[in-house]
Image 1 (spheres, rainbow, N blue to C red):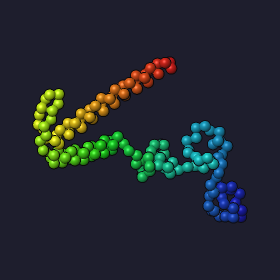
Image 2 (cartoon, rainbow, N blue to C red; image 1 turned 60 degrees about the vertical axis):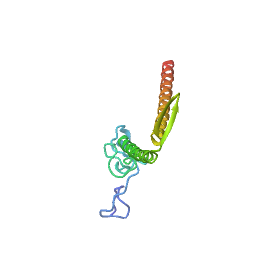
Image 3 (cartoon, rainbow, N blue to C red; image 1 turned 45 degrees about the horizontal axis):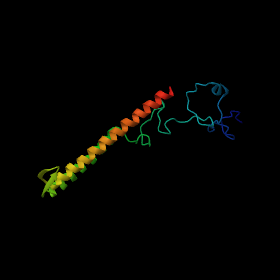
Image 4 (tube, one colour; image 1 turned 120 degrees about the horizontal axis):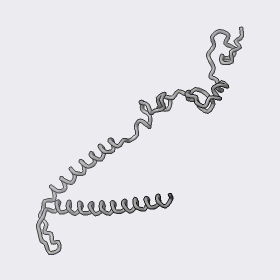
Length: 151
């Protein structure tokens, strides 16, 4: 007996394996709201193959998209780096407790070297922050002017 079913493999008379069809049915190709995901050849694609659930959302598993960095993760990393820097600063200050005489605009004082260097670094960081904020405000003002001119 020969099977006339085109989806059966040739030479398998009784219950042969089903073949994948490379073309859609005529009614499927006319429908623009086909909810079944298909590849370029028209074969049905398993939506979880590429790390997506049937609803199209990112699913579980160990896909690259699931392992991306989050804001909370970045915050924890920043806290960890900050703690390490703080410990290193404390060690530096405790090792440099030699008193140093400082003269600034006629004022004279004595302060431990580590603390003095910490104040100098904090002053430099404050200066960088102030200049950075000023530049960001300047760029926002320019962007706002450009948006208004495009209208």
